[in-house]
Length: 173
Length: 104
Image (cartoon, rainbow over all chains, first blue to last red; front, side, top):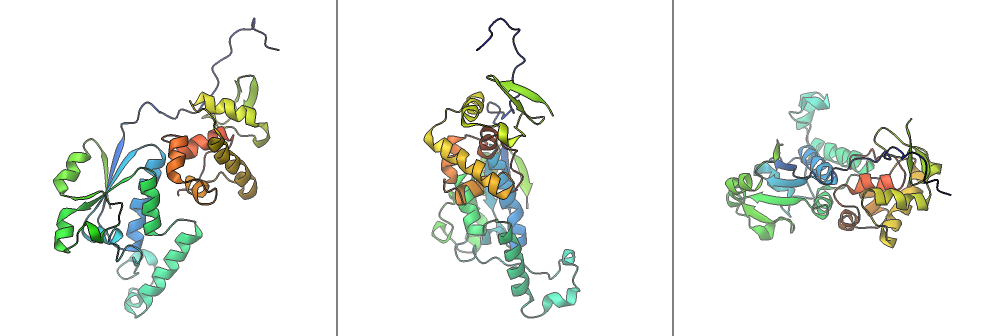
């Protein structure tokens, strides 16, 4: 039974999902084509989209390997020149090391239930993310939209990208 | 731990308002929580929420959006339509679970 005579209750505690304030925008420039440098941009894009942030990724230079159909599923990781692996640097140059390090990193990523690059891009697009390819990189590598992951919206110039991400926060990776 | 009253249900919540006691939740309450954030529950919404509840029991943590999509079988795009802007957090809220901790 509801007692309508009691004093009004304090408003219930409800999380603020900030539905109204959604003009935040994030631009991520992906310029690297190695496996370990592909993930930071993808993970951050995915996180931003999950927070309702409009997100644009611009693939340029080596970052093109992330959206080139020929290479996107086969990015590699090398310990060579990467002191953070804490391995003797001489080892990095031995035959087979890149393959071994790549397999190991892929397994660590898969163990966390994080998808491979192509599937990760699918997820980002399904979440409303926008993918753009750099025109100069396309020209340099003689690539057209046909060569790129289907969900890339267009090949655009650097100035087009700057224009369409007006007001965005920017990450260069 | 704060206690708040929503539509006659007295529930324990964290500082943001997410429920902290699994067993204080019921589908009736879930419907009320959804209404608080502007969501009118349909069968599809319930399918997601029931997955979250059962997966939480099995895994001990709130599933991420990816898990709801891949394991729960509801496409990511659809989840963004059902629970706009912040689907993972909104689903967790309606399901009476903590915010998901996973990054992906």
